[in-house]
Amino acid sequence: MTSAISTASAPWLALRAQADDAARSEELASALAAMLPAGPVELHDLGAGTGGMTRWLAPRLGGPQQWMLHDGDAGILDHLDLRSVVDDAGRPVAVRTVVEHLGELRPDAFRGAAGVTASALLDVLTREEAERIVAACLAAGVPALFALSVTGEVVLGPPDAADPAIGEAFNDHQRRAADGRRMLGPDAVTVLASLFADAGWHVRRESTPWRLGPADAGLIGQWLDGWVGAAVAQRPELAAEAAAYLARRRSQAADGALRVIVQHEDVLVWPR
Image 1 (tube, one colour):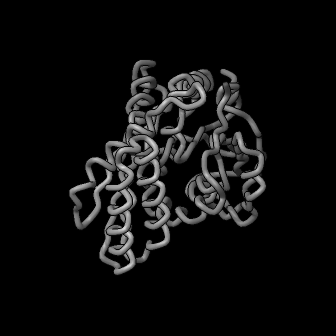
Image 2 (cartoon, rainbow, N blue to C red):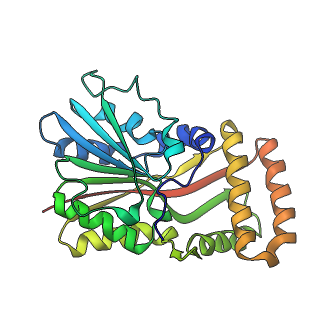
Image 3 (cartoon, rainbow, N blue to C red):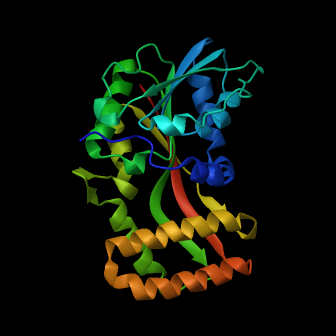
């Protein structure tokens, strides 16, 4: 079975956009920019969603730029609005979209590209899908920047005795097999980095955590619901404990007392 690249709704992507942009690695973006040839350049973004990666990255790269946005969900691409996006010289970027599934990604998918990007994607891939992306990057011989992959590390303050059980169950849920697919979950960055390293490529990783506080109450609330809900889906025996836990955490968030760090990593790879 093939898998749709997109795994999130447009409202969720809009809610998390500010936290995503604050977390992304400026250093790796600058390093990618230095690797690109003089324009015009073509860039491919996988799991493009509503275009968050393009909006953030395009102004940090030279141009003129042509973006090819890949997503398995045709509906989410309807929410794209990149008319105001420009390159580092203020020139508008050109955008094309491709609806496709990673199970169908061809080895020559990035032919003619100058670079490849993805954001919040790796953890929902299977190993086979990750291998397809790596093979296409190797064939094209171009750098790739994979942003905001969850690592499974979450720190909430104040701490709660139920934090470890909820976190472990959530991470197991992220690694679950569903519809014939076993997702990489929090192991994704390590798997991808190893695949590129084994191929002889350079790999550079940067920590890119969300750091959420009282100003992020809406995002915290939605994230908490998803985090705890996935934990219970994985371990139904946690249901009663999780309900009480969620009530405590919601109360703390409403009082402005809750802080959350959700760890991610950005990964830049390029050929030797």
